[in-house]
Length: 299
Length: 320
Image (cartoon, rainbow over all chains, first blue to last red):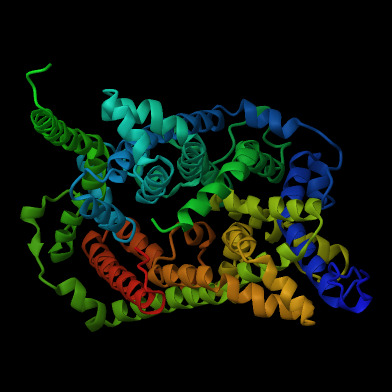
């Protein structure tokens, strides 16, 4: 049977209407607004001092040189702060994941009485706090000022991550699977290790990234708690003093001080600090989206 | 075996079960204990510190030797002229920037709708990759980029405009107190736009495709499809996020405003979180700072319950 042309449900027409132009243009502008700052800073960092001073560098490096980067890598204090950031982030993520996993499993089991009360106590921590002064005095009285523990322990538990993992375990691990493991004589710890965790790998990857990226990017607590022991400054705080406040100078060999333009050095340290995030960005894209979806499911 | 009757077996079983279960509950609680302990020490123990808000506490002097002030710090917020002006200014900044971010919360919605209208996977993925990236760099880095682009000497924008002959003297965009609120809002939009859109994109993907087909048969154009099907389809998601941002209305955060502050824009950029830091850590007025953060916490909780109440009223569901 032949269908008359007029009643056919045609796929979207490809004639370019005004909306097509508008949408594409605005998306393109937004993308460029995100790309250009990165390009400009990379260009500056790879350029010769003379071109930067002459204000000739826009989006492409001029007089390509890696000199600024060799200076960054020769600056012991910058490398040290990178090292501090890595150690703190790794320890923070491990501790955060262990306490979160250990708490999320029981809270997802109906056997635990008082789950609602405990969950409520945790959710509350998301919305109020003592304030920075009581926090500071507490960290001080625990003797953690100017130690890496002040950057690890106070933030190592996230009620938000806990809720995500709890609902993920509750919805993805069938009670029957757990019961049959129990009949076979497995304890809770055994069930957690050999059933729950292997089945939750993607969400565990997501939450580890949540913890790690959050820790890597935060500088507020380091600003408060790392006052005198400047060897313990994480990268973001070091960057703050170098670029934002410009109160600290790059540790250069005495001979090259006059020759170097801080602008190029600033640009290269900014790129240096951005690179780690760019490196994990593919993983972030893969797992974060999933986490957001799970987070939007009611906690 | 023959001596045991079925009933006895099941009784034995339940007894075993019960003892196992109670041991289990104990174990389950033990597993949650590390998290509980951390939350107790670092979230609930600081609440004891609120007591400083009722004393004239100076660093170095023990609390028991400090003078008891009662509600002095709270009433001074209103009775002391200097304090009152400060509080009014800080609250104005806080409300203005929170208000602007409520207004701009429709931008991720529009962005998500636009993005899902694109058919080309390559273009779509490229846009999403580029616009999501800024969400994952720190505020220190955001400021560093802002500095490279807009600084008065050798900033990108000034260089371009000078080269084109559009201006004679470089503009000092970062150190200016005009449009500070708008600038801060735009930076936060720049950082979070792509990321905030992800949830809406997911919501749009969940809309029944037959609705679109049916509307098209009825002759609906591109705009009408977006306006009458996509927008209502993501309204529930938008509403939940809106309520959450109402609950966070006075928590603008600290890191963004701390890096962008300077002597010139200070009057416009100082939000509550920054103010609490400046009077507490910079001026060492621990007690007044604690009093302000105490009030802030209480208002936050009230806003949270209000938002939750609204949610129950309109959606029949809790947000907490």
